[in-house]
Length: 269
Length: 265
Image (cartoon, rainbow over all chains, first blue to last red):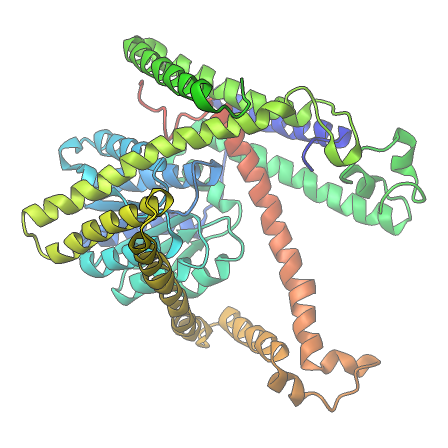
């Protein structure tokens, strides 16, 4: 779908409005509760382990460019870097996409400032490696073997290189926390990492770690939208079973005359 | 304005773009600190609004090529993004070279590898750019040797290592320690057997029709993939889509304060 159909326009605007409304409500002081997410609780455990062992932490934001997934990864990494800096633990972040380098450098340096350890930040710790998939993987694997990290955090878009990085970290005995929206890589992370953040937990990470009202509000908004989607899926299933493909037709790729949305003969494929 | 230019017009455009960039750069440095955040917010909102409007605005034209009044500007806007990202490549190369040059200059441990990296980088740049402008065959031979002979082979080597890592990761994951690991082991075993001829041969004696067909290993594997795995992935994708939309909205409307805008810029 290159352009929105009328149902898509209405649905996307309603979804966006729900999310923005809960964000604004949270910013105005509404108390919100989020459940415990084991993978995210493990982040503190991994940082604590690195502090105890006196070894460094590796952060990777994956192979994405400047997009929502990578910016979310960077936000998670910033929080981890801040926690690590507070206890004087070294953090290193290899970068795949050159355009991300200044943003990552600024974010990690801000994390050190926030922890009151700006003197401990070295620009060499956020370094560009390569924008070639396996050259980047080889570079990260080399860093892991040389630095013998106590903990590695792999967040962002990953492809086949995910296993190279995770297995090398396993070889040096690092505790590993990974999170990716790349559904094809989730099984590899589950097999090789200690904790994996799955699905939309990935986007809940910053809210969970910072408890910022804006992020909490956004997360609650997402949950409300997901409940609505679930209800729609159930409704669509029941209506389709009753030979009334209204919901199915609403999600077609092209606009159709209003009456056709109710019609099994004209609507749908 | 957004058409491909040649000759004098091309150089005029390049010079014009350079002058505008320099003016913009100095203008941005003069922006008072208090105004920087609103400026970033405004630029972010305007950039996002363009793509949102282009997607939502009603379209017209033949079904295979539907457009609205903004569609024609999608390509130039994505070109601008590409150009901006290309500038950042220089920063990346600078970061890489400065770290390794320092290592070589101070003869720190592993400095020889850093030297190899710098020399390789120079050779690759000469070979790859040189083949476009230098007619001499040695440049082409050097490019073939460096790119096809070395880089592609090294890439393939790294990729093939994954096979061994899959085995070691699978060994750890499939060790029967819990109910979940047992389910994982059994389902992975069925799917693996269902994908290979020798696995299918095990249940080849079972008729492929009627109720008994469900016990053929390839049918069990297909059932797991289509009825269990696919819906689970779709459910994950639903959550990811909504999460991505929420994050995009926070960034676009500059509602995000927790990660990037906690401190006043």
